Image 1 (cartoon, rainbow, N blue to C red):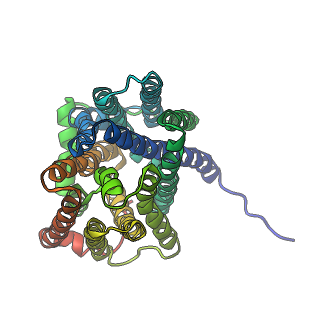
Image 2 (spheres, rainbow, N blue to C red):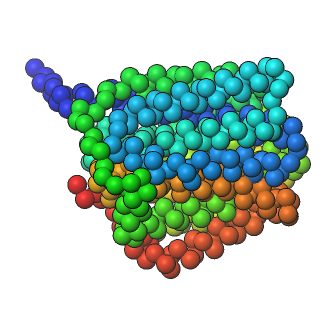
Image 3 (cartoon, one colour):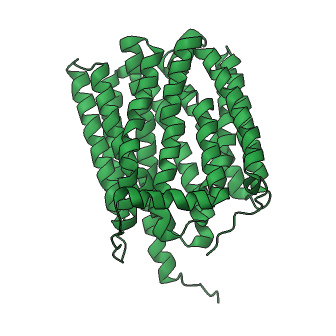
Length: 411
């Protein structure tokens, strides 16, 4: 007679909250990607300006400069799932405004800049809360797998979101905004359904700035963590080509919004395939060297994308770029989470989020500025070359990261 092993109450408690977290992250990731495609195409159609495309990224980033300290501290002293839920509600409000303004034919660049700034503020609070929340939903021994599973789900959303936005644009930008609004509402509902933490989080002594500095000091004292976070910051800051995709799609690849959607989806196709590989072949040794190699491949693929005049070659290069970035992201996310104690995770995640924001949104602004000076394709190529240079410098400046062997936590 077969004997069935009864799951422990602890494991039963953790499965449902993680699934709800997973669903919420899929919805919000897809929604943010659809919003990015819609806003980029909408403002390019309004102004045709590379600088305005870059300014979208800048206005998304600026709230992080002023709010990151508060966001990190709140993630360490308040219910993280409530913060994440409220962030989705704010995002849904932004989409409601975009939808109504679009339907009224009253949308202009000033409204877009203002609304993406509000969206950026909401994401500033969302990122440290959700990053810290994940580590409380699974045992520490399963965190690396949870990070990979969460990342693969997000990459799947990154594939579907932009492609869907590009296709739906045939029905009008209001349709894209409406579907995006539904996704943010679904994400808010999923986050709200996660049980609140059983223990009360104590208030942290000190001013907002002092508490944020605590996070900075912790990262500065962890050379592996500092190297991983800063490598991602500068490599993506220079190498990101997302903001310029509307220009490249029209001028070099001779396609429309559907092609832009495919270009935005392609990195996530590569990332999702790589996440499947990582699920079967875990990263067990030489993780530092693997991370540097993946960043170098990311930079080289960026250079190739800037040189390409074929849509299909560009899609292939972007898929390689995304696969390389997935390796780097899994290693970096695991290193940061496993080497940070729980009472510091909110503040460390907040610092990490401003680094990520700088690399993504500020990188978009940098791309817009260099494209205005040199042209879109030269700006992408120059960015890839700079990312290769950053990789070489960080290998020399952070030997501890280069020699990191295993993704092992202290707990």
